[in-house]
Each structure stands twice: as structure tokens, then as C-alpha cells.
Image 1 (cartoon, helix red, strand yellow):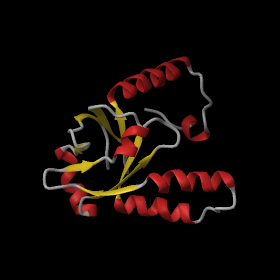
Image 2: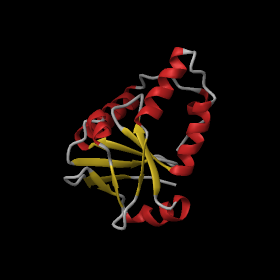
Image 3: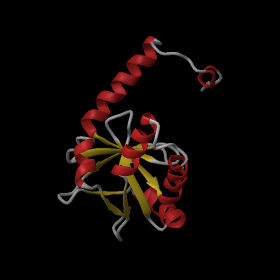
Image 4: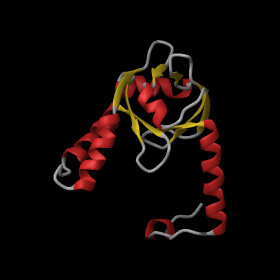
Length: 152
């Protein structure tokens, strides 16, 4: 289970170091095999342990390539999907097309989202958090049934 926001620097080769607190579980759960793809709703990337990604692929395989919206989702998620393996230093390469998509600079944020990570450019992340907090404070959103039942 991944949680928390971690500030990380990409190295000159486009690699990011997975924080130490996650490395052993990633080695145990997926031998350090990860899949990175685009987020179709946000200007960030999604980084999945391979078993989690395989569940996404199974769902994608059930979509129809004859329905434009379903094919578009397949094209984006699968077309950008890139497999990688953590090296001995716990680093993973973020390929150039993915870095360009998310407008990643040297400073990035690795954000735990339970079964996956989001990878954000640090400045874009700060803007997104500010916008999210503003929306929450103003209450300018529709409460789904699940949100109505959610309390802290």
C-alpha cells in the first residue's frame, strides 16, 4: 500500500529513485517490475507494480476496439505503457515520451495512491494541490454517494 507525497529529483538519464520505504515491498510483490503510463485525466504519470498493471490490462482487453471512447482509452494507456525494473539502487527509468507528456522537470513528486503511484512535476503538483484544496473549501463539486458516506 502506497501513501504519502515524496519529493524526488530525476537524474540526467531520466531515472527516479523509489523511496527506500517502498523498495522492499516492491521487490517482494513484483521483483521490482513496474509499468509506467499516462494519466488520461491529469497531467501526471501512473506507476504500477506489474501485478496491479496486469489487472488494468485485463480490464482494457475487455473493452471494444470498435467503440471510439474505449479504443481511445486503450490507445493512450497501452500505447504509453512502459515496463521497467528497479535497478540495484532502487531507480527506475521514466522514458522520454512519458517525461514530455507530464512536463517533468528535474524536481518531481512521487505520490502514493494505495495500489499505484502518481508522478508529477513538482510545480504542477503544487498547483494541483492548491486547486484541489480550493475546490474542497468552496464545496464546488458534486458529492457522490460514496463521498456522502465518507467521513474523517
